[in-house]
Length: 288
Ligand code: AMP
Ligand code: ZN
Ligand code: FE
Ligand code: FE
Image 1 (cartoon, rainbow, N blue to C red):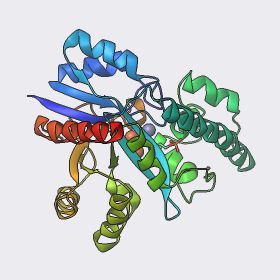
Image 2: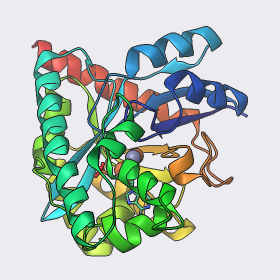
Image 3: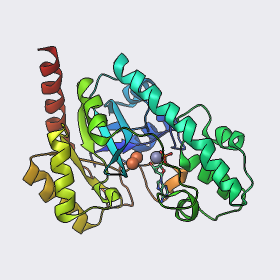
Image 4: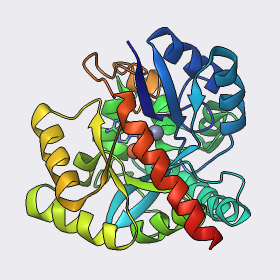
């Protein structure tokens, strides 16, 4: 059945499969268009485009930016932007620097809590990609300190847990601006993650819309039916685009499949044209 998936991770950040492998999974379940949205990097895009062309899947330039809003971590997705844009690339280098500064501090905190691991071991897990907490979680699982990645986050790594380190993040409004500058469409990722709902979520989305937000990720692997309908209504109210994706990572979230989420996710192809048109409009505006 034709479907799209606008939220996927690869080995270029904290996913466990290469872009070509993710494309293969996508092809198997009838995905016709997708976006790799690796954390704070565009490095996987060329490989994804090449693999997509081979099997006839459209690969849309994508990214997931870590940012902060009102003191809480907020993820902004970007689509159809100029991924070769130099200004954007220099901003992404800064994001990588902030990861490099944070990650060893997380390891130090874990060491202070009595867990024996080194940053070298974490780097080995990440390979050449963007290093993230899931890589640290993998090392903790491997060493038997926790049974799962989820437990690693719950006990140590999540916001508010004892080994959490606040890193230098741009404000969400700034991250939205970065996508705009590169001619793309900025979207609020997995709204339930913001731990806001109702009026509070609406106020946040309104503020972000004033800063240039153009869409909400309404369809998502772990959204309940109720959440999906709340976000759908919110998007209609604020005149925001609808997007959707699995947030596939591979091993780090083993219960989530490309294009199908936990089995009941289906993001329709119909969502794509409005996003594409919005991006075209953005690019035209920039040229003017
Ligand atoms: P980082 O980008 O290094 O700050 O790590 C954040 C990433 O860790 C998120 O994008 C998710 O992929 C993953 N993550 C966050 N919270 C959890 C959790 N509770 N369980 C599993 N993975 C998580
Ligand atoms: Zn991730
Ligand atoms: Fe995210
Ligand atoms: Fe993600």
